[in-house]
Length: 127
Image (cartoon, rainbow, N blue to C red):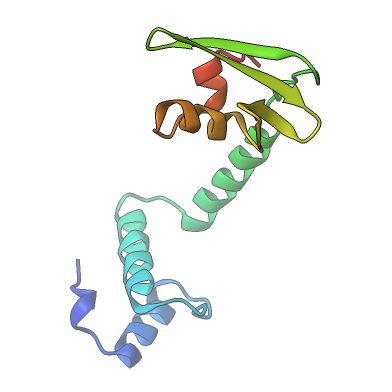
């Protein structure tokens, strides 16, 4: 494995052409180095980089088709957290908690706990 950090911009571009064989996109030096290292590793592991990216794209398409949780406007979510009861109302604009409207349940969960949460997990919303 080559130490790409020692190469000049010109040498990096030549290596990119040699290893990847496509025009170099407008990305920074550190990302160029990471791509070259990844392509080198993929070659060693006998992984087709283009095939890999195709599989990732296909997986992402499948991920978009997951059913979304649907909550009806005017319904309420109630959650007990650290001994206190919290109530959130579903409104057309999002989620109403303590007279403030949030775009996401995650935002409400963060307002309650002070930490980032997946709102569906925090409130027990099932798909």
